[in-house]
Image 1 (cartoon, helix red, strand yellow):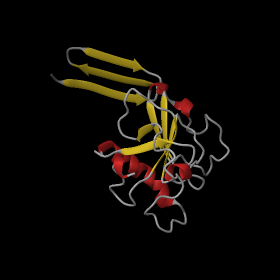
Image 2 (image 1 turned 30 degrees about the horizontal axis):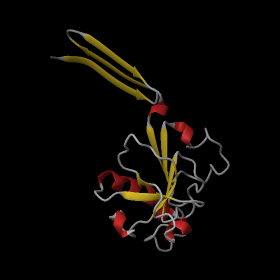
Image 3 (image 1 turned 60 degrees about the vertical axis):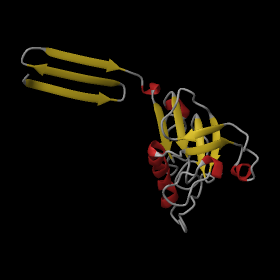
Image 4 (image 1 turned 180 degrees about the vertical axis):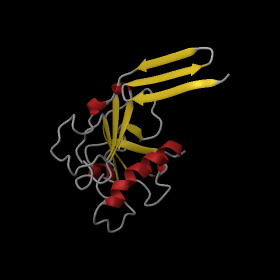
Length: 179
C-alpha cells in the first residue's frame, strides 16, 4: 500500500484523522468534551492567578474529575482546595528534603516529581481524608477514608481534602503501613 497523504490533528475538543492512499480515502472525526477527562493540577500557579475565579484558572469544573497536588501552597502554588480531590503532601506548603527553599522552586517542582513517581510506583502515595495537616500528623485521621494520589485512577473517584507524608528524596512514596 502506497500512502499518498496522511494528516492527523488534535484539538482539545476534536480528534481528526484524514488518510488517503492510492485506492481509497478514509476520514475519521471524533468529537469529545474536554470535561470527559481526568485532569491533574500539579501545584497550580498562584502568582498572576491569586484573585482569579474559576474559568481563569484550573478548577473542578474543568473536567469530569480534577485532582490537585499542592506542594508549595501560598507561595508559588494555590493552597486553597480547588479540585474534586486535593492532596497536600507534607502539609502542601514546604516539602521535606528541600532545605532552605527561599524561592519555593524546590517545593513547587515536587508536584510533578510525585506525580511522575505515582505512575510507576509499586508503593503509591496514600493520602487520608482530614481537616488539617496537624490533625493528620497527630493520628486523628488514621481511620478516615484513604485515597491514592496521582497514578492510574479507578472508576471510584473520591472527593475532599487528603494529607500524606513523603520521603525527603526519591523514591518519595512511603509504604502505607510506615505512616
